[in-house]
Image (tube, rainbow, N blue to C red; front, top):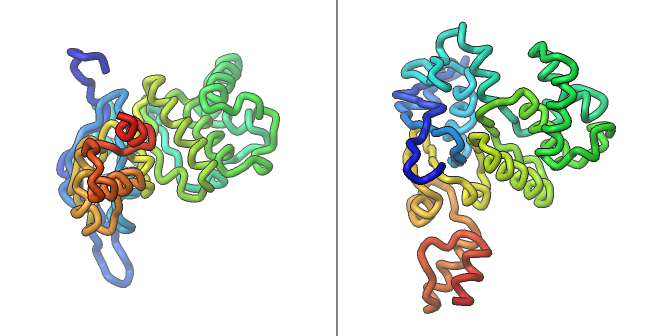
Length: 282
């Protein structure tokens, strides 16, 4: 966002509450009174312990779930209006934890083409979209490959390309690196950051603190409520509160705190290896 330019809202939740019906325990509130906005081009990370409601919230952002109470708008479209669902799901594309659950074709390019084909996009346009999407996620050299022969990180990048080919304005990722090894996680996060720089709004659900460091803003859920929101620096400085919720701070932030306790002068905002090296060299 350029200085002086007013942000344009793409997602708004107001008083969002959602309850599941459970056979053994009856009603169970997964989300309670959640209100926030996400602006176009923003990168928002959502953190929270297991059972905090992160995935339930993600599914509300493209109308896979509808509020029990309160409202959610996507680009001005109310999710509780069924007539808006087709358009909302084009605007807000969803990527899930397990890429194997999203890959449906026998070659990479066929898989990426699947979504645009279902939207009725003309063949020539599909070809251009597939090539563009694979280029954006760094998988252009794999278009003829069989998806099942790819690594976990590569599969997830193909899954992201499949969503990108439908030209969403917002990418919602529900723990996309949870099942990947460190290299695969790095590949996917580099892809997500690159897409955000291209102008795509990103909402990332994650339990890896170091992934949230890359975001413009971090939101923290606990027991279905929004309990913190701010820049990564603002949120991760509240280490004691995060630990009380069963969360941690990024490894570099913990190391920086240990160095401060040992007498090393460091800025409180150190969250990445690059920032730590810069501070130590200074």
